[in-house]
Length: 118
Image 1 (cartoon, rainbow, N blue to C red):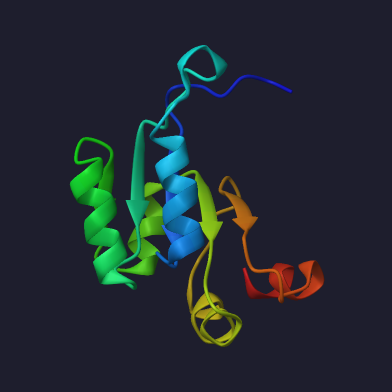
Image 2 (cartoon, one colour):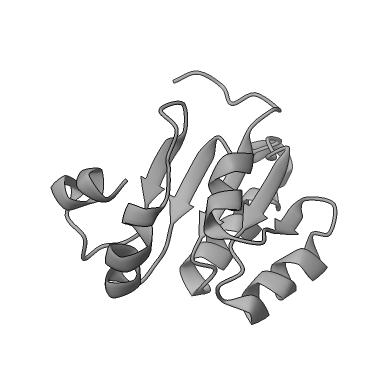
């Protein structure tokens, strides 16, 4: 597996418990085990309380985007942590460029359905 570059910008759609924990992990390298950090992280405005907490904890890295599309437009790796009903409503209205890597954290949406949504 190739090493990640320092130009990786992460995006998070659905700033809930799991997404917040994952982004906290990426902003908190563990001594010699990991020195990689993302260049920046853009989080969705949904889950405002958790988004604000992430931004307060990592002000140099985390930005709360105005919209979900703004998260996608600013990032090259997108983590999706939306509730299934929200994902089915929101994702079809968004444009995911072909160069963006999408990582789903939604256990109840099968891969085949996710491909159709994004």
